[in-house]
Every structure is written in C-alpha cells, then in structure tokens.
Length: 262
Image 1 (spheres, rainbow, N blue to C red):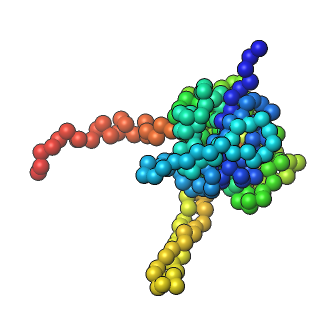
Image 2 (cartoon, rainbow, N blue to C red):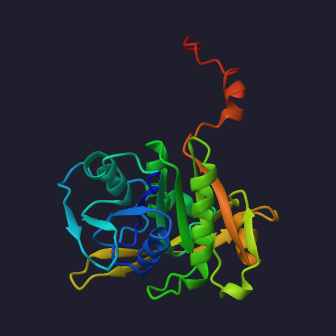
Image 3 (cartoon, helix red, strand yellow):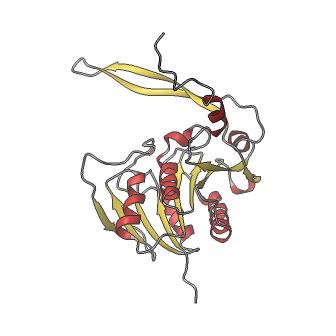
C-alpha cells in the first residue's frame, strides 16, 4: 500500500490566519499534513532569514484534524528551513504556502513572504506552490478558492513541477460562479509608485509610513494581471535562478580584462 503524500503547509500571515486554516483543510483531503508557520504576521518579509537572534519552535493545537502543527518565531523562509532540517523525517512531496490575504501577482512576488516560503522549498528540491487571494481583509472568504486549490495541488502531485520552478497562483476576489477558470500566464511588468507619509512623533521625531500606488505597465493579454482583472485564476511558473541568460553574450563583449588606466 503506497504512502499518502506528505504535504508541508506554511504562510506569511501567521499560523492562525483564516487563509492557512482553509489551506490546511484542503490539503488534508490529499495527504498527510505538517504545518510550520510564523507565530505572527510576516507579510512583505521577502526571503529574509533569521541570523542575529534565536528561533523558537513550538508544537501547537489549533483546529481539530490529523495535521501536526508548529508555530515558529521566524520568517516564512525560516519555517521551511526548520521543517526540512528539524521536523520532517522525509522530504515532502509538496509544499504549499498561503492562502495569502492579498495579491502576490506581478512585481509583488519579489516582496512576498508567501512566495519566498515556496521558493525556499523549491531550493530544497520540493515541489512548491504559493496561493494568494486578492482580498486583504483578515476575514476574507476563501470558499471559492478551495476547489481550485485542491485541483492545482492534485495536478502538481500527479504530474510533478519542473525542477527549479515553483508555481505562483493568484485568485481574483470573486464568488465561485464568477470565476471563469485558470490561465497559465507570465508575470506582468508592473511596479509600485511609492511615497512616504512623513509625520512627527509626540517626542518631535520624524517618522514615516510607506504608501504607494500599484501601476500595471503591461498591456499584454497573457499576463497574470490581465487574467485576474478578467475573472481568471492566474498560474505563473517562477524560477529562482535570477541570471539574465540573454545578456551574457553581450557582457562578454565588454573589456573586463583591460586593466590599463588611460
């Protein structure tokens, strides 16, 4: 009799967030679940790791179910590292991160703790998926996402994910009957036009709140932003090899070895 798949679940919104509770519920239908997630929100942490302070790990019991759960004082990337090195007795068949409260499409993938956890799993050779819903509300409704989460994860388990690639999945904030389906996309070219709201503390010191506006610079109809704006779930294959391979031949024409000073 074959073993049930071992699935590692993590996130960046914290172990008690509704998004990860929904994800755990779905993953229990597919395999044996181990949860290692931050003990507090870690949104926007990117791929930060903890090197200058202690890490704490505690087994917790939050919901009824057959999953094992551990709360970690570190970042999402720390959670995956600790799971692999200290908790799991074998490599997971899949790592899923999320469901994030808010978008991780286009440029947001760089800042995302959700996606960094998935990328850390990918670096470890674990097939991984990050899931996000375009609703920042803590009490967001994840019901419309669940059947798609299950289907995408099931496909990943059965078909595999190419080596050195993880999947970035974003859900539009729509009821189930309004979702048109799933589109495999490329990451849109977009950025944040950022500003800082400068204020003074009661002690007279300046402090700042980061604000900004998201700007989509891409008119393509094959992007994650287009898919989400048009009622589709976007699936973007993401790689953690950041080499700009197409630039190597051009850089090889530069005179790096000409060290004579004119």
